[in-house]
Length: 609
Image (cartoon, rainbow, N blue to C red):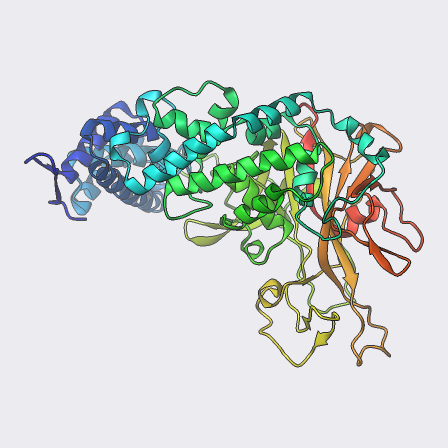
């Protein structure tokens, strides 16, 4: 780092030594033994009235803080190894740190911060909390306090155009917003059965398979959930941007909660990387199309609304940021669509604690116990708490193996599991435990087989066995279809519930992979090899509110794409219809089989919501 780096303000002749400013920050907060928060970063912008200068000071502070934290931990490890078994007085161990002040050439202010971190590390009271700068969303939307609203004078012409478009959208969608709020308040999901009594009459264009309400959208919003409805439907992202631009306070609780989620989300640029305002504009378009889609869906209109296709098109522009499951980033699956939707709204309902260390049990599970030490100078495990949108369940990779016994998965057991995660730019093995989930919980079971040598041609669904691909690549990189992993069985739970910390979560929806069986190749016709099943579509299985309290719950299947053959012609049935528990001979699967063998996304709702 350049210790003589200076910054000359454009509107004055004064120059500011950034290192001196950083030292002042360290000195000020080391004396108070307080953390430098995101609000303090916003105050820097107010203090200097220069965003570039504030950002440079912020960056220099973060680099310096990371450096001294790393050095403090290194010194503590050296002290523990050298003096940990000698029972030396605590003040003697503190004095040893003076040697490193000269070694690392710390200023007095920086050394005070170093000692504060050193003491906490020595006592094992440190945390894995990462000091984060203000996010890009915080830069453009400001902080919770209206005092830290964005400054209109420092917005570029390009961003100003985005803001004007957002304000225009807010004005033109007020009627739509009032409709969706009114419908959401009055909506009764138990009355959705009335849709089953309607004779289905194809509308203009219904003979085509789109635009339509995607099963993922239907699975979430067919139910009434106060947490989901507040975050996605009651909130108004365009109104948030306009209010902050005009430096006005937010009036509605749903807007305040969404605003807080946006500015605190570390994955702050999701749908457009060119500018934070462009990203907000893309997210707002997603929300407006979602309003119209949900409004139509809950009225029984499943097809031919422009917003249906516009919603999916806008979601396609959003990125997937996944540190815990890199393989799902490939392809265009329902799990990815759900992640894009949740990411656009910064919706991360599930809180998990991640532990790194040794455990008494070699296998993960609820009986695994972290090994803590009673020695105050030695602490093996420190937890990291984080929010995640979806819980990924890792499944074995089945590569052309038919002799394997089915692998059974119990969703309840995955409240406490062992995962390999990407953290601090490296792969780590971590024990992860769910603390709670706010209102709703999503499980993702990726049933795609990873490696395959065959390529499925769209015309005739025939094989091209002459082309081979490297076996290490995910199948979805090679072609558009995925073979289903039929060796994965999710254990059937007749109660349709899972429990955690005395809180009951009811199963509400399952996104199911619909498959077709491929014809055998000429070499396989005379063999006993089973035909392959590939995922070509998806549908939603939805459980009504009383499903967990009834011996014969009402379960519906939402299948807007499904076509049937009658008199050698294709026709479409009612998209929403009853489905039995058990399989129908020579007919469709029951919801029990779909739960066990074909479920991809499992959505649970907290019973207290």
